[in-house]
Image 1: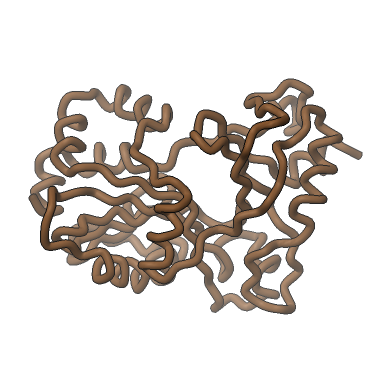
Image 2: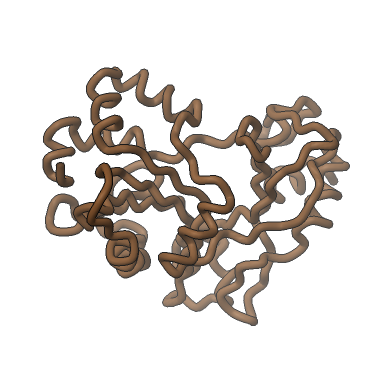
Length: 266
């Protein structure tokens, strides 16, 4: 089955839905005017081993690849932007310009001649350029400089994915996605993928689990990531967006952003 056959079978809308990246809740609950409340949306044990990664302020981007055919789709967080060939074309936000060469490299580096056909979804952050107002934190105002960092990926047998898409309603498919039922790559496999395709991951940070209180978490964040670890220019301002914290088994995931805590802790 190639990409056109897959799209003909399940439709672009369902393929779009099941490959969107799941939403990540803030660590502390958001209240009025974006201020944080003491309650936590997610709870980490103080003794728990966690994976802490820098949350880069860019635009969520996905490359959905069929390694056995070399075909791919490029999407933003919500919609498809480009496909190899003429299946989709939407040059929004400069994402396609920034990522197409990487997608082509993925198609070449991950080509397989044997085994069951699969779908590989690679998630990254396009940043710099004019992607967001925070681009100056990474580029020092150079509108022509973009970066791309991989932060997650999953792989699934193509036929299994197609069958699930046929059986589930759009609402059920969205629930499956948001429950993070995908076959995610572990850290070792993600590092190997990153090396194979020649794209760095979002920075990994050695840190303990975040504390319970809002003020204490803000202090933890400032100690954990005082400056971005992914600058595109030595002259960039370097103020980071924040971090994402995950349990090793992915049972708990939360984002901790500077702006939320700066707004709350005065």
